[in-house]
Image (tube, rainbow, N blue to C red):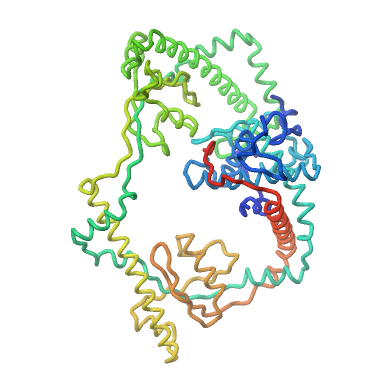
Length: 575
């Protein structure tokens, strides 16, 4: 069940796409969220105002954390690029507005409602149990991965807000339920009417071999696009690793001291607290036997204990590394080697890496990348050079790490003579794309003359030397087009075909790979039996979509009337 985490229903989250969203019992308890005392002072409103009330820095940060969780669930990754972080901020503003609307309309989200939303999110039935251990599995799966820098509490707030948004959607999107079977049938026919088409492609790859640039052309191309060849700032680290596997024996000893002979009993208790179907093999399909499931539980407990022992050893190492330094005895990059040698430990070094991808080992979250990129030996105010090292260990599932700065490479534009081959390829591809699109435009002009002469699409393509491809029949509801591997291009073809009358040719359509022209030869009848079978579910889906569309329009109006965000380009706190 938990092994295949399901995305939120798309209809419910269209509002976010529009962009204009301890104990187990405590986790789903109603909280003050953005507006309560725990959110910090709300004095200046420098982050904006909603219903005339200022939004504090703390509220903005909480909203961004929840927006990151939404982004993670939709994109299956954490936001690590500038574009992704900008998207997160758009979502955070919507979340702030939704939360304000809940308070403004006196809507209280109960723990049961939050739990129901969580069950919906992970694919459980409303009647299925949602135990503490299941919830921990959900958190482990969602909050993991490169770039993760949010907490379990952020997830609980996100669930609370999401359940509240369902309330708002039901209330203010009620008019969306008004759709008749006849309307639904017309939409079904539109989306499922098979279209038989012919297409002529103008791929840029056909022109690459024709291009032989001169030295002046390459120099000019590079000069105008130097930013494209900028290498970002990079750093390299020295680190000492305390692998979790090296501390399994120490972890077992600690467990023995804590649990004694009750270890197996504790494992049995954990197992019976959960649904046996929770424990599955790596494929997620086969339920493990009780013995195999208990063995997995035991191993996970042992790993956590070993990791705790590894962290103790790392902290001891860090304390020795930090000792004996002051303004007269500053830190140096070599200190980690000296301390490691006295403890018979190896020092590893990373290659140079930027702040987007990070090193292969150790794997760092976005927050940890920010931390290591703050390391420096050049700060004039840092007399003892303590900023060469992180004062706290870094921890992941594999082990614990003490980290120091090895070196830094400033951002720079790569000289042309070092990347000439790459620039030549970029030039050729760029010019080839221009030529492909010019050929497509010329074909479109020729088509106008051909129409006056009553030439067929096939005859026109033959005269112009353009190869015709007869595509398999497809509809708007098709899951792609057989033979078209580029999903974006397939979607463009579907959209163009839908908009064209039967027996007509489209204008030239530019694409990332060149372009195409499309001829709609025939539209086939809809399968009536299949329509009768699928129409009831389509009516439900359309009502859901209309409901969210109505809610979206309402919330957008509310935002225009009551929300002001004076700093839409703010990046503080973005992952």
